[in-house]
Amino acid sequence: MYIVIGLGNPEKDYSNTRHNMGFHTINKLAEQFEIEVTKSKFKGLYGTGMIDGEKVILLKPQTYMNLSGESIKEIIQFYKIEPDQIIVIYDDIDIQPGIIKIRKSGGPGTHNGMKSVVHELNTQNFKRVRIGIGAPIEKEDLIEYVIGAIPEEEKEKLEKGTDLAKEAVIEIIKNGIDIAMNKFN
Image (cartoon, rainbow, N blue to C red; front, side, top):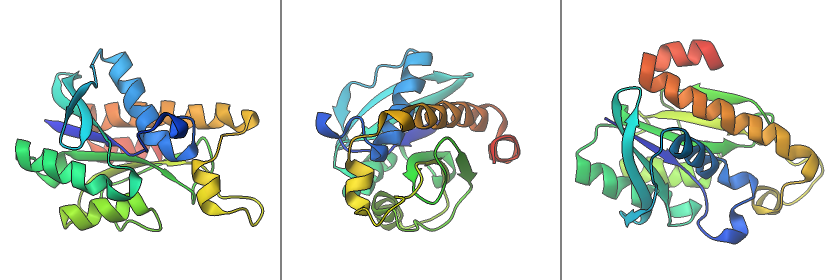
């Protein structure tokens, strides 16, 4: 069994922002595999289903980004999930839009949602799929950049990133992280 977590912010105002790439990927997985992510528990919205013969739980924490780890900690304790059964999907300013990177483990970098996850789980040893959103070109405020509206000319690249992230998650579940890293990194 895998728990696949997409990081984002719950309110409608944030739905079309760079910071919600994790939520968008969960929505795409849910649609493709007909998993309803509507149950409310563990400080999140979740749904259970199958991906390539493997039971999965899709989770969208509803705690806001900076407290995402609280939701994840609750669900993994309830289901007694080991860190190697966790896949976290999130946006990354250090990767260009439309590009993804898969990692087996590692630190949270500057991402506050990931800082919360690493802190709450007390480990860095879980899989992650990072979706590139690029960094602000000018000296634009970083917070405004990640939670501000996405310019029309950027939407297609970000859409490509979430499509790739969805395929990467499927590949991890189907063939393992090493094969997925070779294919997508």
